[in-house]
Amino acid sequence: MPWSRLYTIVRILYLEPMRNASLIQRDLAVLWHPCTQMKDHEEMPPIPIRAGQGIWLEDFDGRRYMDAISSWWVNLFGHANPRINTAITSQLASLEHVILAGFTHQPVVELSERLMAIAPAGLGHCFYADSGSAAVEIALKMSFHYWRNCGHEQRTRFISLSNSYHGETLGALSVGDVALYRETYEPLLLRNITVPSPDCYLRDAGESCADYSRRMFEPMRQALEQHANQVCAVIVEPLVQCAGGMRMYNPVYLELLRQACNEHKVHLIADEIAVGFGRTGTMFACDQAGIRPDILCLGKGLTGGYLPLSVCLTTDEIYAAFYGDYTAQRAFLHSHSYTGNALACAAALATLDIFRDDDVLNYNQTLAEHMAHAAAPFAGHPHVGEVRQTGMIVAIEMAKNGKTKEPYPWQQRRGRLVYRHALERGVILRPLGNVIYFMPPYVISPEEIEHLASIALESITLATER
Ligand code: PMP
Image (cartoon, rainbow, N blue to C red; front, side, top):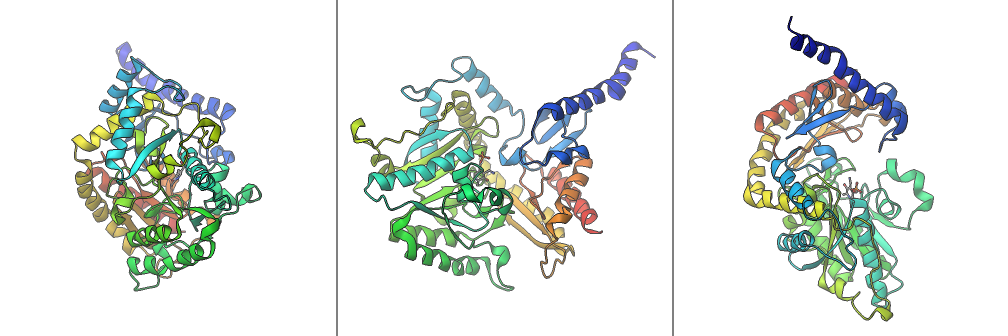
């Protein structure tokens, strides 16, 4: 046997698995992973990823995994996308980063102009940060500070929806309502007003999602009537409560909310960190209701999933309330070191180019139809309570009894069984409790959608048969 062949065999059988294993060992010695009970890694170690290409990730053993969740909903056009790679490397040749206080640069100016051109009309200024949670903190502080600058110091509260998620920092957690993340920190949080979500999973049998969303606006109307003069803003995730289990509602709710916020002179903050950039079928979810929020928070897909960047777009009216002589002490003095990072802005510009040049929103309609078709067989499964879809998000709600929607007790960790089985079959699903979802990069092919659905169906069947 030639040496090269022998070496290849030795490499595949011994060396690369050892690299995989040794990286895991080194990882567990020094890392503390996000959103993870680290003890779980005793039975399921983290997977060391060597490289990514398109919707596929590869470990050191050469095993491939389909990234069906877009690496926590950030990746839009695949890993190692040549156009985004080129944009970052060419930006790297001139400027990687500069302080954005007192300085500016070409990519951040152009990005702001282009975001404004595609966002709902009337959002005239961009304030940047480096994560979704930081954008939410900014939106909350900005709204509160606006009212203070306008002489309404009694406005100190926010209204948000049950089952909402806006991030993990303390302000963002205060307007969130997913018990798993919030409960422990309750004593540290702001006094928020939570109103029941229009989540259509909870509608009556035979009731349409639109009717339910309209009906569920009543508690919001009452909360605004009762508390408006103490409230700075209402914050919502438009159309899909993602971390809350991909629960969906009808655009009519957003229309009613916009009207009521106008009537009561309360800001509307749209947190489109997860749903922005085409995820719900339109560029922004607010577009489906034809509304303009007072503050629009964007993150995640903004850079195509490459670099941490987030932004709050605000109305000129909000911007103007902070404008004045320094000594008037009206300025918004919030800052993050990496605000408006030039490399991240270059990635974001390349991402917007792809949307424009490839007619992505139109093509996604076809992809969304493929997803609907692939998800159809789940509806008849005895342990599926609902299959729902908004644009490029499909969610399958596992239930102990699919007909009555009686849930599985969380302690049984059925979602984890799905996760485990799908991983063994080379697909990354990361269920939210009992909810399995597909949120793939937009470069997935129809055949890959079929493959994803068949592995998910097999995994759900396995996870629910005992
Ligand atoms: N808002 C929403 C709607 C989100 O889904 C997330 C993240 N899942 C955040 C805010 C927080 O973003 P980040 O993780 O970048 O802080």
